[in-house]
Length: 471
Image (cartoon, rainbow, N blue to C red):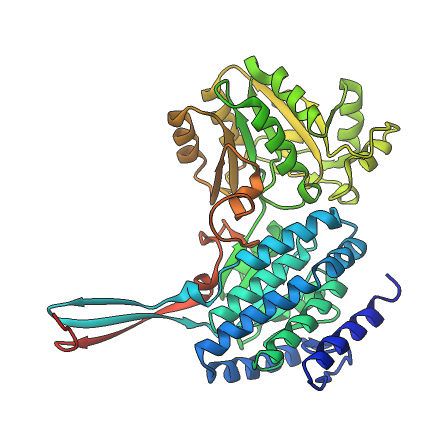
């Protein structure tokens, strides 16, 4: 987008003008919180953290509320920017994704103190900030990862320095500007959220190794997670997934068919929790396919599946091997992918359905695109066993459609994932059409699971012996 930077400056100026603020100029001249040097970004965030530490919890609540308000007001605009810059997903779905993430990411209410009282006195447990957090964010969920992380980290009393994915740098800088305007407008310090305007692998490594960074929060693929884990710092890491969805003979097949298409095609499958492969009991497989086709899936022939596979798989995965998708087709629309093999499908097509055998690379490779393999199995126990294997032990996300409580419980135990969804689309596990809070950093490799404000805090305990017990 040629005039993107001009649009960013204009919008930031308008927001600041409405708040009666003066623009804080940084080295790059692009607005509040955006720096050309990672050291300066960290120094500014450290200063902002120290200033935040002096403010009341009530002010912190107001800051979070204003971030939500300003981000919601500009949601459609930056959803389109993200789509135009990255070329990933559907901007309409991004609007929904951002909206529920903004509204349902926990704030200061998530760090309520605990107290313990007995014959020996009183103990108070509070959640304290780490300090300056370094955060590496992906291109796939560029906007909501930054917003959700910022809300949770600031709610925990921290400041944050973002090193966004290079292909999402412009929209990321825009959001940093926008959130700083909201923070200042609520009485908070400037540069509570910062980023670098030209992020690189080198700047990410510099961020990880910087002595002023207390903790790293990384959302990305295996390589960046491994690098962060070797940094010597505490790391909260959200790694890859290959979520299986199991459908057994007791399932509500009409509901399952719609839920799978809705979940797997949402934002063209770029969310890590989206359904990536279907494992269906053979007796209901044909019915499931029909229900999926009623809801926007298009089934490919054997010859078309081969062509699609050759197109979208760069390194075929298999048992014990994750493989790799062709990045040119990550997050692209189903009709566009089909057109690349000479196939014309309706523009309304949400998902390309491919029935394959269990050894097919589409099953084993996390694609992040609306191409969905389906494997038939003999019974539900075989389905669960196979789901465990093709998930690669990421322990990220799994989905099951069944009315058999015993089998639902069995799969939940065997998958041992951070998120397990029963009888709904995958995104219900993030609070969209499901109970609970939202987050887009799912820390499976390091065990925190769905992150929240308290994830970004240290537990501190204060004990008074003998006194203050009142009964």
